[in-house]
Image (cartoon, rainbow, N blue to C red; front, side, top):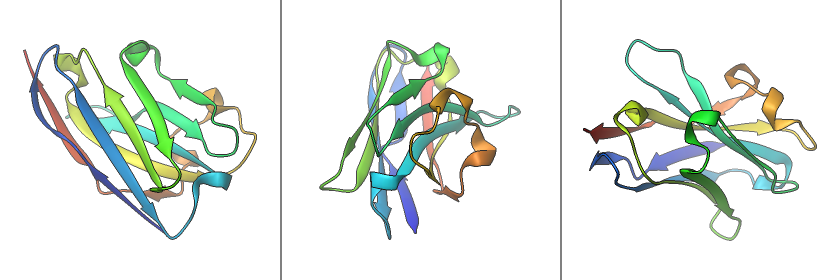
Amino acid sequence: LQLVESGGGLVQAGGSLRLSCAASGFTFDDYVIGWFRQAPGKEREGVSYISGSDGKTYYVDSVKGRFTISSDDAKNTVYLQMNSLKAEDTAVYYCAALLGVGLTLEDLDLHDFDYWGQGTQVTVSS
């Protein structure tokens, strides 16, 4: 099972980026895919999750209304569309996978996720 992130980069505040998480070795149906981020000197935090079994989503409060998570099952890829980016969104972004269906997404944290990508840097200049 492999997860590969892409799409990070340098963007000005107010701009947009779309991150991709390409999965191989499994299909999304029985998994929750999450996006996490870790800024220098800070703990890794969950940003957004999507449940492959029912399409339910979760967002941390700080990104609600700005970020959108989606999946393309045909491409086995999960996306994180990030709009109205702020300097405080600067971090390394990781995608991760958790085998499970019918989970309460709000209750999940990083320790529940078993598989991780290598991360992609997002830098927002103010």
